[in-house]
Amino acid sequence: MARMPGQPLEDARNLLPLIARMRDTTESGRRIAAPVVDALRQTRLCRGAVAADLGGLELRGVELLRLYELLAGAEASVSWVVWNNSLPCFFSRFLQPGGRAEIFADPAWLYACSTRQSGRAVVEAGAYRVSGRWALVSGCELADWLALRCVVEENGAPRLLLPNVPEIRMVWVRRNEVEIIDTWHTGGLRGTGSHDVVVTDRLVPRAHTLSPVDGSTLGGALGRVPIVCNLASGYAAQLLGLGEMAIAALVELTAGKPAVDPGPALGERAVVLAAIATHRAQLAAARDHLHGAVTRIWNEADAGAVSAGFIAAVYAAAHLAMAQGRAAVAGAHSLAGASALYTSSPLERALRDMHAMAAHVIAQPHFMEDTGRVQLGMKPLNPQYLV
Image (cartoon, rainbow, N blue to C red; front, side):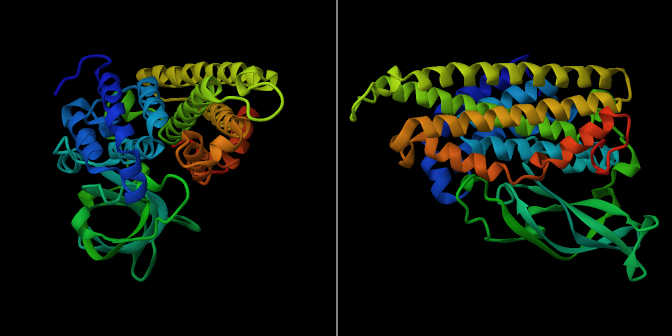
């Protein structure tokens, strides 16, 4: 199962023509096209955050960022599902080794996840009786296992860890144990198949559940590096890829779009020329800053526990990169004029995908508010900030 250095990125590059050919199928089917899914399974690109001894690629932070950025430049729905697979993979560090080995036994398996605690897990003889409905479960139709968060109940009431703090566990269920409700009718990220899922009265063994309170059972940086800020950096990498693609599309348009109105052609307009140079510089600067912060946090994880300051630095760099990616997409779409209105234009899709991505919780301003708190020596308010 060992992979040569750089092979995952080479595999991803080799997939780009297939992803491009299948874009319309992915869009119209509201799920990633089957040939692309087969290729993702074969290359194991969705298992970047899985240990090598379980058939994973065990990529470090910047390697993951490069992967997400590359895929997002070809099809945001593909990068979104690959990135979403990373969260259950990272969280699997809190499983007991036997449960983790079972859930990750087949290198071709894919995963889906919901962090909304909209299920209930009733304690029952060393297991949990699980029911609930979860929204926005990206890639749920493709997944072999789904990780879903639940409030633990015992004796008819939530089980409390502290006053007013219920115990939350993530439960893992197989694809045939969930019902998928077709809800994903959207403008952007159509190919992610982010439907609702329902579980009804399923008994889940404790070995298939986890909580960060349990502590990591995985060694090395992969078992220690903070999860949620790495999720933010992966999200940001996708926007950098989307932004680069948008600027490249604008450059291509300037070469082939003749002037139809009085005045200079698109490629001769000062505002367009300056915007292309400015956005490319801003994307490059944001990428370097993000890669630097992520490299430092993984290096610190190699040595042991990671401090709050390193975590805050990743959030800050990620949100800066998000902003530059969004600005590049919006700027390119605006400067392209009427050409960007047509569905044949990659800029039309990029704008829709960008707006859909903006709804994700990781992009919300409270993460930067907590980053400011940490930088002032205060504790973050979001309990997930340091996880």
